[in-house]
Amino acid sequence: MTFEFSLTCPSEITTSILASEPLEDSDEYECLVMRACGILSEIGCKFHIAGFGSEDWGFDVSYDMSTLMEQVPELLEGLASDGRGEIDFYSQGVERTVTFERVGEAYALHCHSRTKWKPSPEVEYVDSVRMETMLTELISEFLSGLEAASSEISTLDPFRTWRSGQQRLF
Image 1 (cartoon, rainbow, N blue to C red):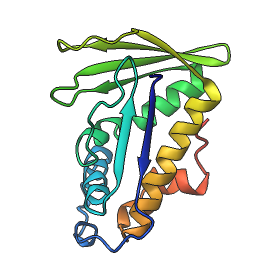
Image 2 (cartoon, rainbow, N blue to C red; image 1 turned 90 degrees about the vertical axis):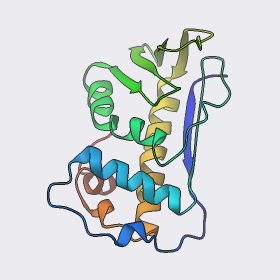
Image 3 (cartoon, one colour; image 1 turned 30 degrees about the vertical axis):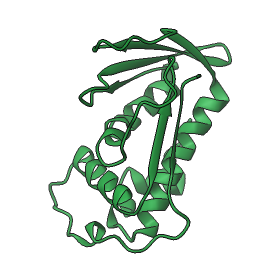
């Protein structure tokens, strides 16, 4: 199973109770992502991630997906600038790091586990267009779900700039 991830939200979404809670002026990006993932979980979104010999990493939306989303800005910046990046999936029980390195028309992904689980293989190659499409679709579905749930979070940066195209993803 080649490394892949996706977020899917239901086609019919009602306003989220969590989305109506006021935001704090001090809410930093990581806090906003955690709140956003709670909202997406509440409205029934599902997250799937697989790879390195495992067909399903068993991620939930409310917490596990937030470990990816909170690191997306740095990953996008690294992939766009020098073709390198890293995601630390630090959720208890998952505890693995995936590093990304652009190699020609693909990304070499190296997985390092901090648990008894061992990746097999330890390195996978994902076509660069496929990887960039997965990230773009993840961000798009993330924002669409928040907007459908009437969450103010989708109007804040960097989410707003991602949606408007003011920040180039790749």
